[in-house]
Length: 209
Image 1: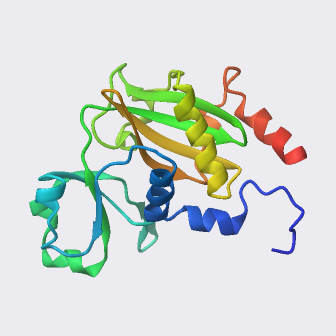
Image 2: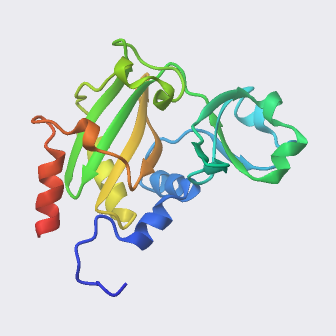
């Protein structure tokens, strides 16, 4: 707050706010993104099967880190049956329940200011069922993907609307739908940096302004 004339990528307060998945979905929907059917609940009697289906994607409301002794664990999106989740344990904390989109192709859109770089995420040249982060890194490939201009501009607008300069956006393509999944305001980018996608140079140039 003291360095109000600094070029933040991103400002800490904006980063903290942008980590909230419900707020991400709210802003994305307002901007016209297609978003998955979603219910956020800790009620095991919620009408999930009637509104979303038996098979669902489950994720935390915010970034989830767990500790057990000296070990730290990170929670990924899980594809589960609602019947396995709808127990009394669910009352402990709310979770995000979404439609499980299949088939789908994962996209990562890295936005910096008015620039955007898009890749598909594949394993053995095929689309991935579930959360691609659970795959072993050597299996993954990130070919450049030509995102429709209107979708790319909406991604840039999303980052700007959320008060960010940088954002790593996860989309999926299913049929003719480009579906917003989430945005990470601190998403890693080094693994995508190459001469075709000069992210390091772009970030350095932005910090020099």
